[in-house]
Image 1 (cartoon, rainbow, N blue to C red):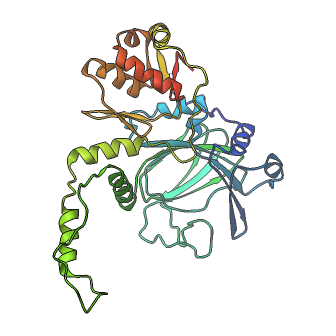
Image 2 (image 1 turned 90 degrees about the vertical axis):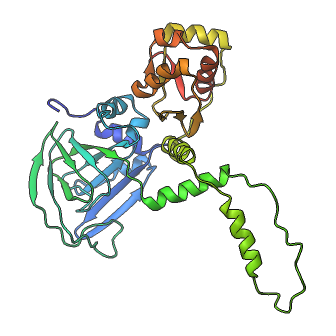
Image 3 (image 1 turned 180 degrees about the vertical axis):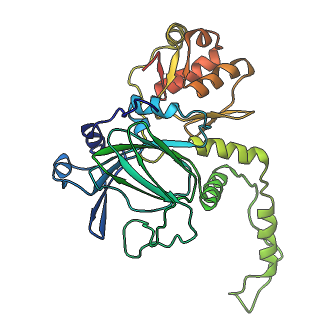
Length: 347
């Protein structure tokens, strides 16, 4: 990306790392010893850092900064369901997080300064024991390059890599979402627990007296097996879970509800005049049947389908498209506006 040096200065990233609504980590190396601290940090602590061999990583900058969000949207050729966030690291000379592997794809875009990247594929992914980071014990790189401002390196999953700052520098990491199968299964089962409904109650009218009261009878096991067999998982259940799960805000993301909200008619007039924009923290996706916003499934009327899909794709809806929306859809947008999920006009 010719001419790119990145929107963030050292001071910008330090300020973000001091916020309690931003995830951040500080990695410091002293010889063979490594330490990791998690934010939010006190400004005084960041001001006492040594001259070299440390890295500050700030996660999810696209959620709190319009410039970072605009940069991440340049990668919208990747489906939003797979595009995770924009992490920015600031490293003093010698700073890095050690050779490691990631389970997801990533674009590493160099801001100001220079960083040396070594990478390659290897079968031995054993870690050094006793460290707070998963650092490869036997790193054997196949490639060695120096990246300057605007240079970008793409790494596939499980590619061993190590980046070390040659100067004070920033690196912008555009990461993909790649959930573990176990994570998906646990989330789906939790979703199922909130949605399944089975009528009836356990009963065994033929129960007889027993001399072995600790025994679970085969008859009881059969009854419970038949009860649980009544749970049916259909494609609609999976699709509904997936849309809600993919758009569910991360644990540290909160929306502030507006204290003053216009009446529906006044909101409709403003919407038709100014259009609307999704909040940077809002996640909106859709499939063939429904739309999903911040963990909620929304049934979209056919007449509004094109407009709301445009809102999800482009993160904004122009005034002309907004003026064509029916009353019920405007009421839904007003509810999103009330909860801080959506803004009138451009932010």
